[in-house]
Image 1 (cartoon, one colour):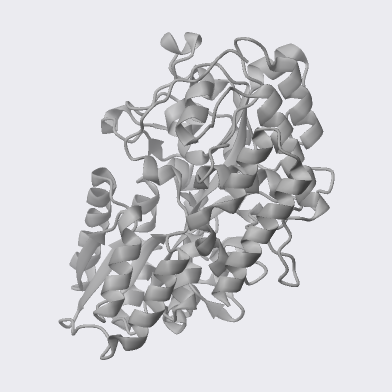
Image 2 (cartoon, rainbow, N blue to C red; image 1 turned 120 degrees about the vertical axis):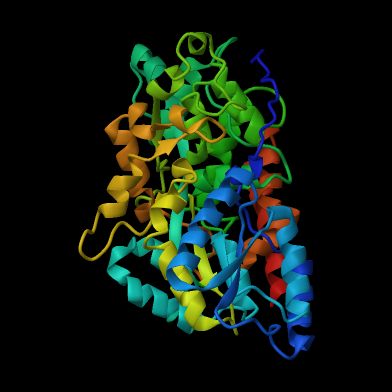
Length: 479
């Protein structure tokens, strides 16, 4: 390949890469601090709670504050809303635990962070379960509830999701007579056929030490039933299924991608410039691909006259099946609300219930492309929220009158795939009771390092063996 993508900065980039927040060292600090805090949380005035959200973009904070104000007007409960940046969450959580001053409610939490809080006994699971029962469990996507449970304990109330998807140029595939890239073989065939001097067959994350690389490979690996942890608790990265997944991905990025380490910015830039036939990204790219984000617009030749050209000519694949495929499985994130231990229970449960009632659609509307509802409706109207979601306007950073619903740009089959995505979510470690391991891996990123090595031509079996050994060491450090 002779085409190297230009690097593009992104305001608000954190929203695209929700990752585990607490590394091993911080975990150890949190355990010791909570053990010696004593005295519980600082006294709160009656009818007052503190709510943290892991959203710190000004537009999103303002939208959340409006929901909070409506709750206060309705109930009289005062709410202090605290926006926490991803890179500050660990420090703030540890210091607050040390002071016995944790918030009552935390929202927009990824799965690994929920497991970390649970492992440190910082969740009031009875209060959380009461909210789910109050809202009616049947109104939630089953898989989302399963991913936020540990045994009989409900750790969080699942709110919304984003999916990792394989995006491909439908127009180029149709011109070449290629099948959609739903399998390893079909993807390799298409990448080889379409790759050329001016077009990469595929771009995907390869940068070492990057959570985006790990997430991209996890999506690919799940399709071949490659598991980080096997059902018996043993590390599975050195299984033949994982070796085959690494070999497939290594071939794809070594032979048919662009030169150099690829990350969340460069992969998108290549596809947006019309220089790649396929790429892996999250659903957060959907508004950008339609030309609805001023700081991340498509730059392909056709996009100059038609900013939504790529949106109309892109297909999505939710599950990529390898030869050892054990059934539909896709990578995605479920973000949730949880209630902390020793919180102001009544006010906290009322607030979380509000975020799934009158506050739910306004919350989803903050970023519909990355907030696919996992509460589909109410007992009286089971599909109410799912149907409303598909009509919500997108376009962060543009005037309200310029925002448009995803349905203006994407076919019904794309929207249906997005809505159904959470039903097929699978995540490494969580089903095997090893969710805490996910957070610990974020510091060293052994999987991202393995992907970088196979992308550089290293032997997949040797790389898998080393990655498995690295993960075992981290797993042992947690026991």
